[in-house]
Structure formats: structure tokens, C-alpha cells
Length: 65
Image (tube, rainbow, N blue to C red):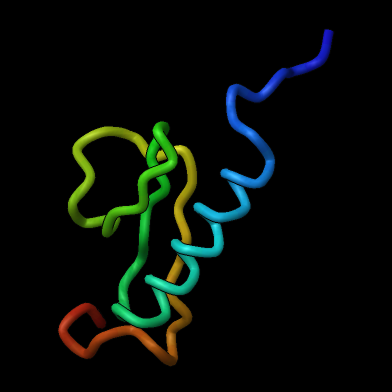
């Protein structure tokens, strides 16, 4: 049995590229949700499909711990 993705490969690639660029520009971790929308990880209220981490060098000072 093989897994069949409900999304087109191009759609998932675009979501991943968008999340990566948003993480770098906004300086925070981003979440790709099950509908392939991209939102800040801190704003999720359900488990994301994927988490894209912001590189440490680009994180906002307010988000550092």
C-alpha cells in the first residue's frame, strides 16, 4: 500500500518555500497547516502539518530565550 497525497507536489513546494521565506523575514517559526496555509507557529491552535524553523541568526530579539 502506498500513500497518496491529497495535494499536488507543486502546491506543497510553494507552501514550503513561502514558509521558509516568511520565517526568515518575520524572524519567527512558521507552521504549514493541513490546508497548506502558512501562519506563525505561535498563532496555531491545532497541530500543524509541518513546522519551519527560523534560523537562529534571524530570530527577533523578543523571541529569544
